[in-house]
Length: 113
Image (cartoon, rainbow, N blue to C red; front, side, top):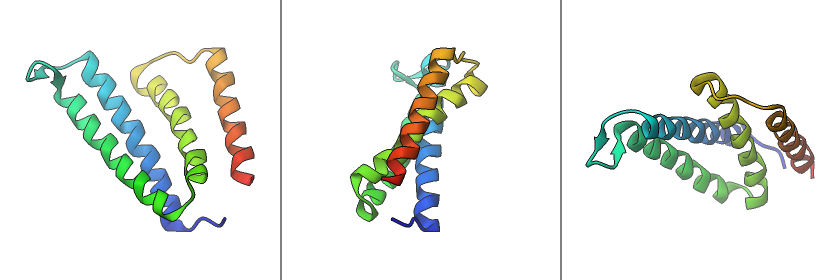
């Protein structure tokens, strides 16, 4: 299946939005004044941005089979781990790097199938 520019842009946007949403939710969980005593504004913004990624995901499901979209979505896990390393200073152990490499190899294999 050939992937055009709009689909590729949507996939990258979906991944980027879910990564940003996750980071904001984590920052909101750790810091900030809670709105209504429950969520901080960063958590609420993170949920909103994560929701935008879900809207793009739903649109992609109209254009591509679920199993294809899920293969690309797997890159989100890698992106979140790497972003949390650079932005949140969370460590990445050797075992996590091994897991990242397995996800990446799985992505390569599944994207060719």
